[in-house]
Amino acid sequence: MRIVVTGASGFLAPFVIGKLKSMGGDVVAVSRSRGSGFSSVSSYGDTPDGDVLVHLAQDNDRARVNTQPSSYAENAVAEMETLASRYARVIYASSASLYGDRGLSPRKEDDPVIAGDTYARIKIGCEEVVLAHGCGVAVRLANLFGPGQSENTVLSTILGQVSKSGPLVVRDDTPVRDFLWVEDAADCLVQMATGAPTGIFNVGSGIGTSVRELALQALDVLGQGDRAVVAAASAERLSILVLDIQRTLAAWPWQPVVSVRDGLKRLLLVRGLKNS
Image 1: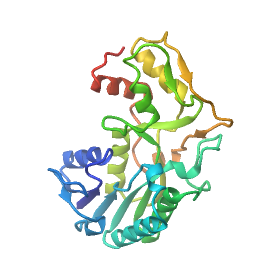
Image 2: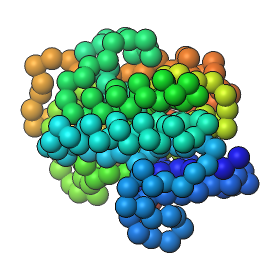
Image 3: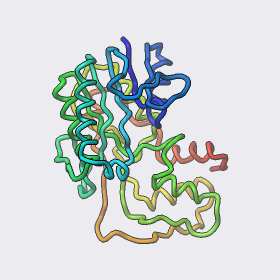
């Protein structure tokens, strides 16, 4: 079985590719960037043929995507149409953010989604294509963290301050999110690529962690528990997004292994900071 993985130069794909290769898989890594170890294409419509496609290449910078013209969304969905028609199985990286952030209970795959902007319309449109394809999986990913993560995240803001003194400042400490270690996500995607179930599946930890808790845990593992966490501003409403992962746990022999605290320890070690 030949498995094609797009987004090879991104955050998640290298972990998926590495795990597939460690299993002895026939893996083709693809990126629009140029580099060693993967095939470079000018358009993902030119992705090499194979049996399974793991499509991780779409831009996850929501703000940047939302500055694009309407044709950008149309082209992304059309590209997904082209890709889905060429593979026996497709694993598509969607986003848990489609649920919005006003649900107090963990969100299930059958809950309504919100097509409120260009980013969401692309994700929903591509999900529909993959599901219509009949042998696909739309993966609604939680907030992934790990080595190589974007610097444009609340966790990166926190980690950027742990080596400094004084209060640790975040914009808003109240939002609650589902954080998942990137290698745990990669393990799940590998099982999805090599398995049989189809449909929409949430991939997260199933545990909510507030921005404040995240900051306090980072300080605690460094032995800086006496430092204050200060919010520059507070939202007027609760912002909560946690995933119900029971459908995913029932479909595959997978479960998250790395806790937020253990993940923070690993990230701090990568950054050369001691932790306890």
